[in-house]
Image (cartoon, rainbow, N blue to C red; front, side, top):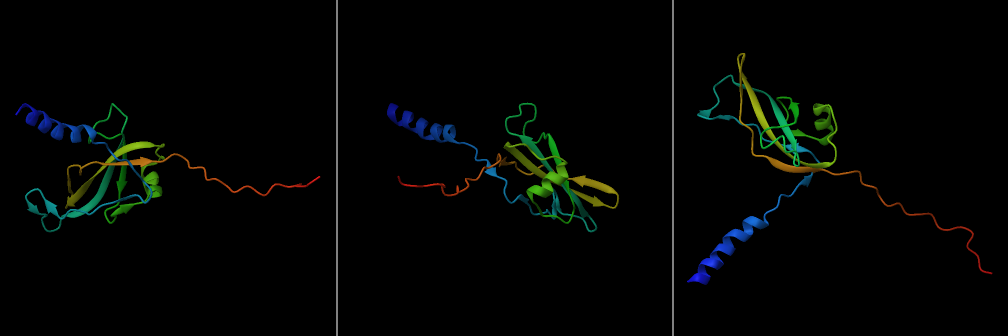
Length: 146
């Protein structure tokens, strides 16, 4: 019986210890689907999306935790995607190479009254460093036999 409990502990504990975060390179950008639901059901007639905010934090930053972001990119109401170039324009900076977490929220307007959703679950992504491509060299010259 003692071995059963030890084995059960290992089976339960090891996968949790082995979990790692995969930081997917941000090549194509972000995509999302707007919400048409409120916390109590469908949104009221006349409530319209006024925009989205993407929040971003550096994974190694100890001063910013989940849903506490260092960078913000405001996106227009009619968007459902953002390329890396559009993200850099909205942020007004290019993110340095590194690993990051991001989330998005949605702001709606009913008349002049704004209402903002909570943050969506965070996703992990990376900004890769500059990639140097190998170039084929030209053939050697002055090759001779003597």
